[in-house]
Length: 303
Image (cartoon, rainbow, N blue to C red; front, side, top):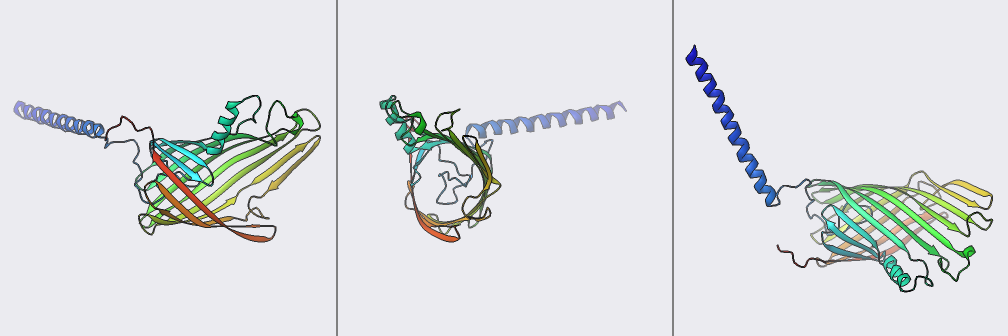
């Protein structure tokens, strides 16, 4: 009996030793992989389309880390902080800020615009990103010391979007929901010549990007409004109505079709058409886009 209990204890001890050895080996392997950069909290999406590394309004793409990307004709300027964080502004806003800084008392109040995008989820084939936009600008000459307050006009906006992108064998598809508001004020607060308005905007979008080659893809987009409204106050009058975005009816969509070509790692060219309906007429407008990206602030880093 004693011999049987002794053998049982030996087996249990050997089993614990084997388990400890396996865990130790696994721990050493994990540390080694982490030091090599093979273990990450999120899996970065693979480069699967010509537009990768460029953060568009409707997709979940991130600007490549330590890369600066410029878009024409929107003048968007983005910088990749890390694989999961992109910040941005508008080049026109940057020029306006520099112009104001040269003579703050006389030049128009600068345009301020900012963007921050954080990738909240990512696997090899699926990614979601949350983006926040905010800005302010002045119209009709801007706020200066020489202009009458009655003609000053200020516009503020903020918007948040949640974008999701998924990859498949032939390209990408995804969706986006965005919600925000645009506020406008003119004149002096508390006077009869003061007027203000607010437009609340909600957008839902679906898009598809079939890929023809490593450098050529198409971009098909459908976006429409959801429960928008417009509020206006002028003196003692107030207007509160449901609003539309792209046509006479709230459900009228905006459609966009692009063909994009990446001529080099730095250049992405896009050409296509935007279709929308307004005043019982249908419009098809040609559109052209050019995106340039380049590494910056990489001095001193090694591969």
